[in-house]
Image (cartoon, rainbow, N blue to C red; front, top):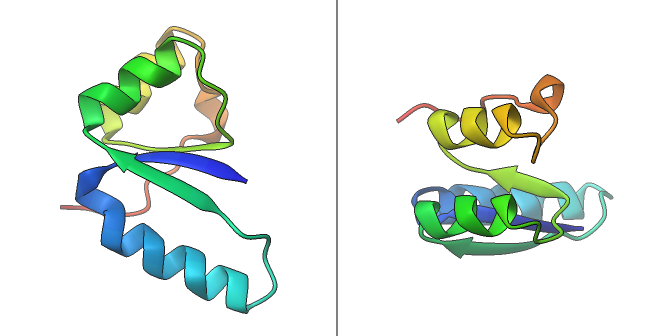
Amino acid sequence: MRAISSMATRALLADLAAAAHAAGAPSLEIESVGGVDAEARVAAGEPVDLVFLASGALARLARDGHVDASTVTPIALS
């Protein structure tokens, strides 16, 4: 699986992905970039399986049909 995230969650997601893989989940390739860049890439149609971004970015992507709004789930508060 392939994911894109902002840099803010890079360490947290790396730890979670490693723990999930150790528990038997498929491996996850996570690319962490600036949040604005990640949002733009998803909006441009870059194929990814998971998107980890701030709630505002996810709301815009959902509103514009780039992510399924019913799958947006908060995982961390900052």
